Length: 320
Ligand SMILES: *[C@@H]1O[C@H](CO)[C@@H](O)[C@H](O)[C@H]1NC(C)=O
Ligand SMILES: *[C@@H]1O[C@H](CO)[C@@H](O)[C@H](O)[C@H]1NC(C)=O
Ligand SMILES: *[C@@H]1O[C@H](CO)[C@@H](O)[C@H](O)[C@H]1NC(C)=O
Ligand SMILES: *[C@@H]1O[C@H](CO)[C@@H](O)[C@H](O)[C@H]1NC(C)=O
Ligand SMILES: *[C@@H]1O[C@H](CO)[C@@H](O)[C@H](O)[C@H]1NC(C)=O
Image 1 (cartoon, protein in one colour):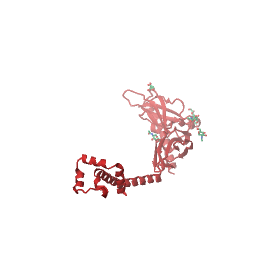
Image 2 (cartoon, protein in one colour):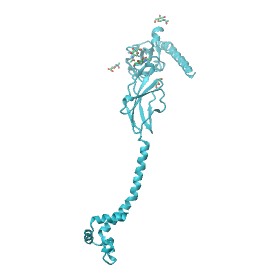
Image 3 (cartoon, helix red, strand yellow):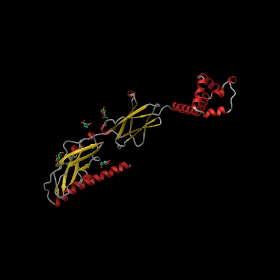
Image 4 (spheres, protein in one colour):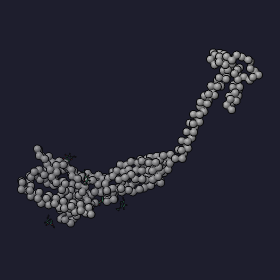
């Protein structure tokens, strides 16, 4: 309903514009003065990217004056069924810019003629006409801007919204398995697109191209982007558990080992304290205390007394 209403009002606007531009404007300029030579605009060209079309031309310069321009077009219908009439582009009537947005007027995939003339006060130039026709299927299409993401095990993609005429062909695959490529066509890119659920720790790649149905043409593909899925969840849990268990064991045993080592050194230094009773020579109790802080030579002597096997045996005995 709304679309229809705007369509009707647009047509009305066009009609009013047509009347103003073709009937009143020439009469006004005719009343104001005679047509004097003013060069026609040159280098008329079309710049068309992603179904947005612009007519451009080189400026006509008149010393100390602001030259204005008016643009008209002729579609297939006007050319063949309307006595080769031209339709003024209202938005590009008496403009100072040397570019005209003709996107709205190029509404079908047919051959269009375009022309522009310079106006300086009462002076009007001849029409400068675009060489050849413009067909909108020659528009240059660019691949969409793309952002590939991994949200947990979900492979997601965000695409640039290029307008209602655009669809997107998305290709995605697990890296190394290009032969098993998946394809998805999307029209609505206003929100994030879910592509697949990924295998743990696998890498996935995505590329996309734009497609415009009305002209049956596609852009080239965007650069491939890859993301890696997180590792296996249960494996991860085991790793975490094992490492924390390992840490706990280390935390408990390290002080014990340190204490044990200190004990061994103590025994190897002062073997007298643990000699079997039969070998024990009665000695004053000061011996032990002395040994702890006696010179190294005294201890060295004692070390030779006790063979290493004995130290080990003692250590095992102590531990058990
Ligand atoms: C048309 O373009 C050519 C090259 O781009 C330039 O040399 C020439 O001056 C232009 N013509 C006008 C009238 O500006
Ligand atoms: C078509 O144009 C010619 C001359 O340009 C004119 O004589 C004729 O009346 C026009 N016919 C219509 C139907 O507008
Ligand atoms: C040209 O016109 C189209 C259609 O009205 C519009 O979407 C686009 O934004 C315009 N571009 C510029 C640069 O004005
Ligand atoms: C555009 O359309 C015309 C005719 O409709 C066709 O001859 C031409 O090959 C098309 N060009 C492209 C690039 O599709
Ligand atoms: C679109 O173009 C392809 C080739 O690029 C062609 O095979 C197909 O028939 C065309 N579809 C339509 C609807 O014109």
